[in-house]
Amino acid sequence: MNRYDIIVVGGGHAGIEASLSSSRMGKKTIMITMLVEQIGATSCNPAIGGLAKGHLVREIDALGGEMAKCTDATGIQFRVLNASKGEAVQGSRAQIDMDSYKQYMRDACMMSENLTVYQDEVTKLIIKDDKIVGVLTKQGEEIISKKVILTTGTFLQGVIHIGQNSFEAGRAWEQPSNILSKQLQDIGFDIGRLKTGTPARIASSSIDFSKMEKHDGDKNPQPLSFQTDKDSFQPTQLPCYITYTNKQTHNLIENSFDKAPMFSGQIQGVGPRYCPSIEDKVYRFSSRERHQLFLEPQTIKANEYYINGLSSSLPIDIQKRKIFSIKGLENAKIVRYAYAIEYNYIKPIELKHTLETKKIKNLYFAGQINGTTGYEEAASQGLMAGINAVLSIDSKKPFILRRDEAYIGVLIDDLVTKGTDEPYRMFTSRAEYRLLLREESADRRLSRYGYNFSLISKKQFEKTKQKEKMILDVAKKLEKSLFNPNKTNLKLLEDLGENKITQAIKLIDLIGRSTMTKEKFDIIVPQFKDISPYLKQEIITEAKYHRYVQKQQKQIQKMKTMLKLKIPSNFSYKGIPGLSLEVMEKLERFKPETLFGASQISGITPSAIDIIHLNIDKIKKESSV
Image (cartoon, rainbow, N blue to C red):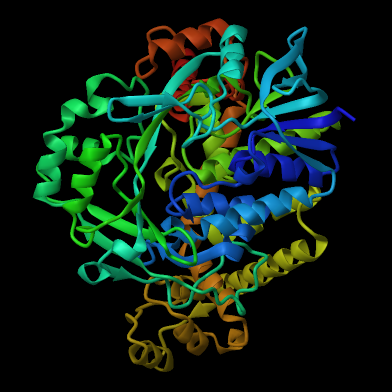
């Protein structure tokens, strides 16, 4: 009864994807969570996706994860961010009904074959000969397994701060996991301390929305899951509202810096640089007269709003005055106050690319325990840990996504090679090959893996293959066809408002112009007029990035060839300009035989590999003279 293939500790976003992937791949799995009611809880903002985060959600979906499907089913506003910019940096984001999201995910876990959901707290990891064999729970249950995946979120020695008042908690009013945290320290894991926070929630009946800017969802909302029917997708959408802080708000905050835990020294953990608290924003950007705030509905009933942009750990009396100073919130009824939470995390350079720990065999970490922040980053890691735990049990090759294959590959590679000293958040700028990693290409890039792991159905996989074939077939025809500057074509370009040409160009370059639309496409290449609007747009986008993608693919191939280069046995890293002392010491210690071997060492970045390559070439040239 108490023997499983895989134990997943935690029921957050990482725990859900780890549990569902391992159970769907046929392994007997148990999810152990402190409160079954909190499975899938969105502890902070009521939204999924966003810039770069939307890419992660689409990739999770392409691999067979649950997050995007749940978002489509429970979303209450859908928007594409950066819609005026190139497709490579656009990001899908959805407001969700937080209650429905939890219910959906709990049902998905409870009804998943091979998955047992169990409410208890894990207090001890059972380890023999540096190998984990199971766990012990607070209720005295000894549960044996082949693999254990820890997805503990902010629960490891979590402490909540509201002004000078602080108390132990893993999340608002939930017990922390202190005993387990202590054991991880005793094992010798390199542990750090991070901080994150959340804003107050306001009763909608007390908000004067007439003083705010209304912010609607997209008129033609797009689902996040590739499995959702785009043509029939018509969710009920609610508006968000925008208001701003002002000088009065800032004065109240500035006069309370001495009561702010992050300034008084009460909080030791490092906070998220890209999602700072309001007191941090006022301190760092003192010249700014106001900061934008988004009021987001927490459920479809919209009886409570989340103030995005007003994260804080100030005392509640100051929080009240601060909120009352904001236009539209003068009579606000505060349902839940803002707070900061400080927690332990494990330095992710302790992990392999599979997310298995280097110290303890068969033990995996996923989510905020690895120093990340965000539901999407956590879910990505949970999915990958679940898949790799199953593959390891079956003695199969591990599943490691490259940086040019997926944002998930960038995320995990950054964590295990560079580590992080602050809450890690995904950005499009982190991906060197982002032109290859558009949201809408995630299924084409990754579905074959999901299908091979039995996480994607044959029907869905065939649909993806058909989509890819259509796009590539049309792109090839456009690549082979010329558009000549004859009178008819010049007149056509003039009528369409397109710049004229003086010499023949390939059709793919004409279709790839930034001014191209589906309507113009139908006129220029009428033979493809009957293609669906969705695929038509994908073809236009494919054409737009065609030359850039070719260039990036050449760079990738060059990198792959370069990584095969052997490093001379007498090669010295000492004193090489551009290499940090830490990098030099690691390379001297491990003495990798090839550049690929060097790239697999924790902390060795792509730029360091480039520098080593240049120096090897330099030595070869000098020796040949």
